[in-house]
Length: 168
Image 1 (cartoon, rainbow, N blue to C red):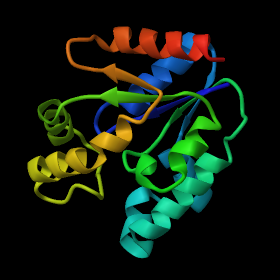
Image 2: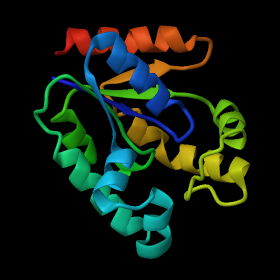
Image 3: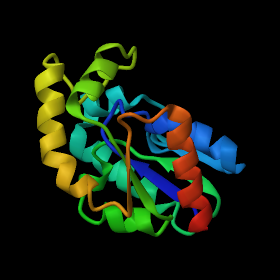
Image 4: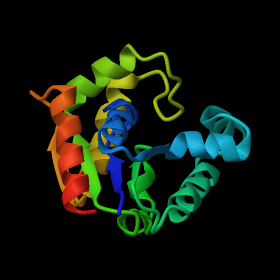
């Protein structure tokens, strides 16, 4: 078994996933980076040239390829669980863990980020609130919820590690 991290962009899936993989001695896979390697171009370029639907298709394929692979910590894109069938594909990898943060924390992180996020546009506040409203119910269908508020990054990593070890 492996473990899959979901949640909004900016919540720290990649950073925390990398740390959890080290704590577990497992391999880390970032679905976005995997797509960039496979496609030989950035996520922004894929969005700009081919559009969101094409990106979501590539994302679903990348998730499907990991089914049954053991000892992975997988970080997904924020919209990945929204595609029909993707939560089930993620569960074929391992338990799905929702890293949950409120809009204020996400907005603050994203405004200070150097990473270009194609889904945000210019109105970061409004876009984050909208996406979180649209995605919240799907995110909460995860097998586990890890609230980020009032927890240190190390506490979150240890919680991911505990979930992964109990279900591997």
